[in-house]
Image 1: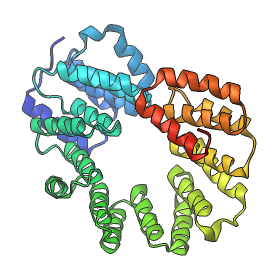
Image 2: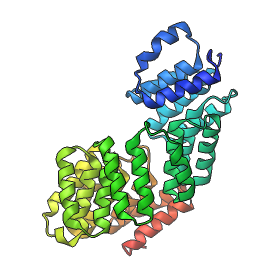
Image 3: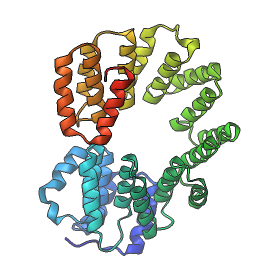
Image 4: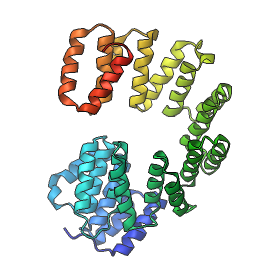
Length: 362
């Protein structure tokens, strides 16, 4: 298949355009009718279809003849697997996409490879991929923003300042101001951090991360009344946001002023958050809530974890083993433990060991 009919410089301009505007997959159809074999157009169209909810369909479509795919269609295939939370396959196809990028034009696969590696704690590899992405296009706003996020998470503050200056002011200012706020959080300068969180929300009041940042400032300052007041207002404004539900449950659960609150309220907020997004943190916290004696219905708890354990997560597997040991189901626990030890590496084994040790079960 021919790589693309477009020049590298035009691809860079089109990629920049894609950063600022949310296009529909159908927006590419008129160009694809003119260039039906163009890898760039097909890849970006398929990638857009993934974001529209067609990840399974695109994975099936592009898996039929992988050897014929160009770099941008391999990117779309990797994205389809990433949206299905299969990070192993996603990273595999992003790397295949980079291998096939003989024209050094595909910035998107390098960005995704950087993000996945960063989430896997492979920070040096992640920074290498995001740096190579920016080598292709030093002004690409999405790549600059991703690198800024990595640097602030790693607390590499001087490098962060240099990168954040390069991000165009018109590109996602709510996120840029959020990262600037986190720079001040790292310095425990809560006053300036709150100023930048509020600037972030001026540009986008729906930017939940900045609301959460303000809540965490109140919690750090042990100003629980303000935290509760702010959270309740957020829950009124964003009644279906899982992160805010979870934060409210944690406020009620862990700060003494609210421990007298009806336990059912805490449990319900955690479960409501799980119903929206079955995040491992939420599921783990529900386990701790049950094990602290608030609910002894361990069968329903195990069923809930198993329901959300596809693809299999070592964190959820570890918590299922914890539940089995805690409630005296020793035979089932040992069987699960044997399988766990045979499946996972040292990092995952240490995680389970520490978890069981916390409950004096190991």
